[in-house]
Image 1: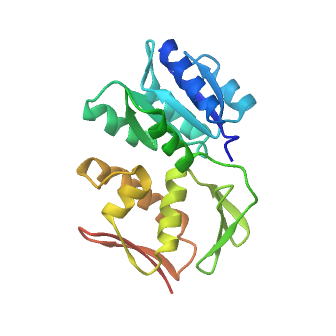
Image 2: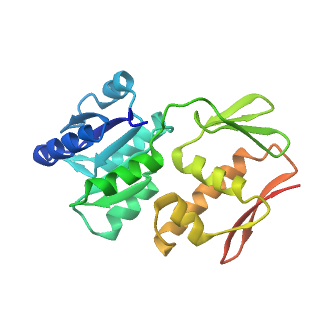
Image 3: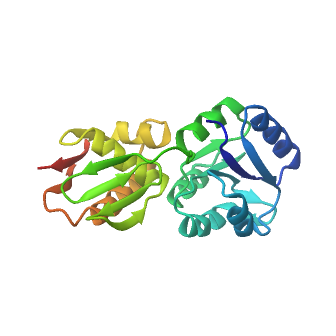
Length: 226
């Protein structure tokens, strides 16, 4: 199970070597580099299941680079690490599409928990039916409508959709959403990210009249399947 490929980018070479050695001992395949040089080429050749990225890499802005990578490779989750504790860095990183933000110093077991939660692991395809018109391949993250590929979902979109599917016609609380997506209790800084995820899913699921996501004001959301 741990043949997961990890791309780790951090300008702290000492920390990078320690984390790389630790993850390698746990059975992961890690490519570490201390700059953003040729990162797209590395992704194409190495095919990582997850990217671990510092928010500042030398003079480069890791969050801005993450935006580019998430647009180009939406199926690869990006996890931010940083010594910054300012809430503005955290909210900017999550708004850019990062799955979570881990503050340095961190325990490698904490990092591994996020890797196991979000990394795209290779396994046989599993398909679920959503409403009348949609099917979702859980291992490839591909959403189909009437056998036509609509989109390959990002990790956050995928986990939100699966949470709704597992709790269809039942209220999904804001706390449950936040805990499922980021492993934390709901707070005001997560509001915009959750709203954007719901907005995207509503657009994707708009081709089935018997399928909808309703807002339960102040409480959460509910996927309704007739």
